[in-house]
Length: 289
Ligand SMILES: C[S@@+](CC[C@H](N)C(=O)[O-])C[C@H]1O[C@@H](n2cnc3c(N)ncnc32)[C@H](O)[C@@H]1O
Image 1 (cartoon, rainbow, N blue to C red):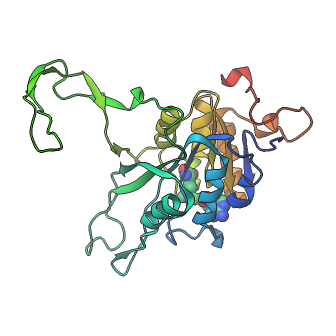
Image 2: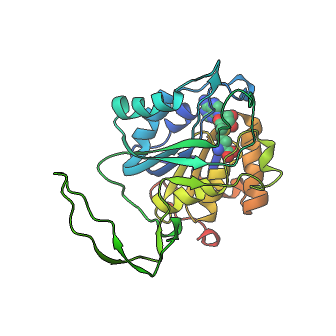
Image 3: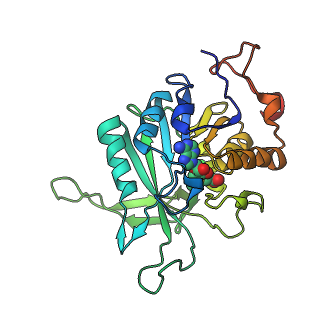
């Protein structure tokens, strides 16, 4: 099946757009849908259940879908969209929940700040299609261990029957996995151009996930691409991308960012036609390798 979309930003409802992609052709999804009615986005609507179904169809076995999401608060109650979506995608669509990363941000007080907590996190559920991730690399996600290089005693393992094994001396590794709370600074993130979009995520979020879950030359799709943050990270990391957004204004913004910040011109890479390359066999231009 020929692909018309590789390395392009497509202005279309993402469910309709993804229907044009072949089954099991994509390595990774990194995305962030609109958060309930927090932003108006010119009144466009979206359907997270249908989006999940298409994502599940186009992902390869072992492919991953990463979604940055937060709930709207109304009358002191959360909308629960994030939790409902996690359960829906796992129970009704067939994903496994590989992990939920907490994105810790350094937000300002925000609306109604005298009457509620200052919200300084978002959720990043990481969905897995199939038995196990086809690709996993986390060296770039490591942080220094507090006691790295020392030999310490402790950490006795507790068995399921409640007994503990005797503690022993262990040499602490200099670096360790950063865990499941990921800290991103939003202040100073991205360019003025990027922030013409009202609800972007930090450039580093797709960058970290792409490096972790998408092999070199693999394909990353963002169904709600907005200002193009995921597409730019894919480009920078020598992966291929497809971005969908229903808003012409944001598609043009994403294309402009790709051009100005990534030196990338969509028309040079429009494989919509006769040259016969298809999604799986496409080899990107040497300058992006
Ligand atoms: C939270 S923003 C994504 C921002 C993006 N992560 C970035 O860093 O720029 C959500 C985007 O979804 C788009 N959108 C809303 N409904 C859509 C739909 N049905 N299909 C595709 N895109 C949609 C909006 O226009 C908006 O740009």
